[in-house]
Amino acid sequence: MIIEKQNFLSNEECNFCIEYFETSNNKLIFQKNYLVNLEFNNDDLDIFKIIKKRLTLHINNIDKDSFINYSEIVKYPIGNNKGEHLDHSYHPYTSIIYLNDNFTGGETVVNNQIIKPEKGKVLTFNGRELLHKVNKATKDRYTISTWYKGKK
Image (cartoon, rainbow, N blue to C red; front, top):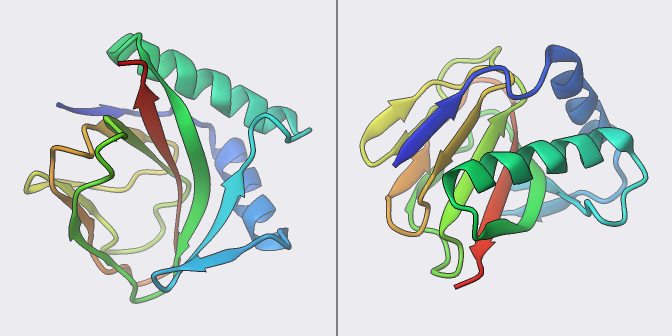
């Protein structure tokens, strides 16, 4: 199962998330990429409450027993990629929201299907069962990545 939904976030919301990332003092480095964890429950920013609500409704339309485990804004710097992998077994679903698309490369490849990054689009798939990767990007690539847990 691979689901793509256009215009999940507006241009303004995407731009805000990138600016939030760039001005954050809480950046972490993981496998040469930069990330900022989104603490939805502790964040005072209304935009992240709205995104959490949209993601919750989105995953509940796919699987009513799944819920957000964690989310992060991720920056893939120029030239970075992520090799083919599966997500943790306790994450039945993964979502990626593309915050920009002003670059070449940087496609997400799920089960050998190439997904073109489009600003504001959300991509959701079974990350623990479908092999996936990120191709090398020619400019910085920003996303919100979310992993879900199931009640079962």
